[in-house]
Length: 262
Length: 218
Image 1 (cartoon, rainbow over the protein chains, first blue to last red):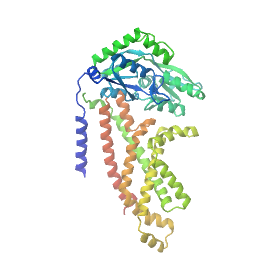
Image 2: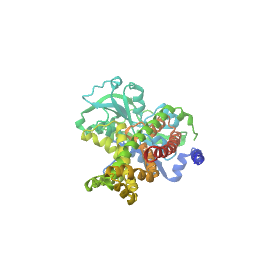
Image 3: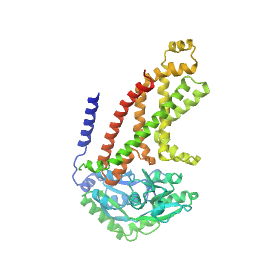
Image 4: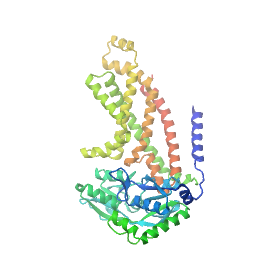
């Protein structure tokens, strides 16, 4: 019995070790050969990506994904992802691109590459008007809901005092649901998510408290996939010049894209 | 793709805390779920008609809905009725309710497998119904179904992985948090898998021992 258990565990460990082959960096060639680009998009992040009344994904990120596929002359396959699993999707080559309100930071740059920015975004802290929060120090002793692995999680973890009780949820729906149902007092999330939540739940009397990070969105590509990255950069630059990027931002965010970093 | 287990193992305090939380959740759920299961098993097999119906409805409701929905109901749904629970309490409560329903059916199977002669013999010795159930019917019934019960408890422990969804800091939550910080998803989940495997094997042995020692053995 004991020996069999041990053998099973060793077998399991070996399987885990061999299941990860080394892959060559040829994403763009693959896409063109397949005539299909697989793009990871959000479905829980209005207005960037959400499920419409017809149960189809829609939003700024989805239109951006279609724009890039059209310019490359290939079909698009949309893969719904969450904040927590979008980078693993890219690492495991399940997706060629991640267009999922992805902010750029040094930790992420170690494992994936980024194209130029394509849309504006900022993360902030939100709470009811009756809750006195002016800055990070005021979070002491309060429960704060945040989506695990998102930029706001990293920023919040950096600035929040040790006595702040940070509850991390799997996706934005969970985080928002926790705030709406009163399970957390303070919500740290993207401005668009919070805006959407406040419109739907006026009774909560929630308001913007302070900014965590101004972070425009970038498109993620696999580490070292330079051919694909430069190609997408060309598409973005052309779309900026033609005003398509501004049009997308006006349509979904009611503001022009403004100056986006390269 | 290069594997870097050190990046994950460097976070061992978090993994250890997660494994402990998983164990504590499971331990409380086991005690609560067994008690609830025995009560409902008794109600369905031996109880008065209305009681049997209530227990039956509970068992069917829980066994025919996913655990994660039950968990979300407790954590996100109950606050609208004015009941606010911490993630940990909500997780334990959902696990007790879940295990209770499955345990009820397992216990009932054991109870119904009791030979009639044993019960008649106990009654002829002037034992009252309570004594007959607690001393003659229940211990051998639990002994008969203990392997099934142990499997169910392990399923509930593994199912506790979804409690991370409501911010209970159990093992999968910690693995997820680690991989969202260092992006070592494979390594984090391989390590979590091995820890779950170890916990399951250890729990199985412990429960088989505890069953003989405390629940039905001599």
